[in-house]
Length: 83
Image (tube, rainbow, N blue to C red; front, side):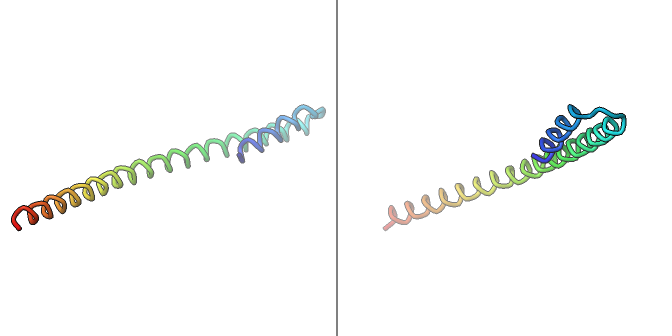
């Protein structure tokens, strides 16, 4: 969203640019927009990597819970049979 706002500003400003100073400003804003875009892409990659790690841990915990509940059910069933 931030990058989109910068790009929208850049597009509208560059359409109105008539002097060399205005074109220079639009070029600088384009460079800033590119830096922001690259930075946000790197943050996105980090978030995805962190989520992938957490997701694998969640799957392990879910498997452990299922195994525990199955063994508990088996134990309860064994107790019923022996009674």
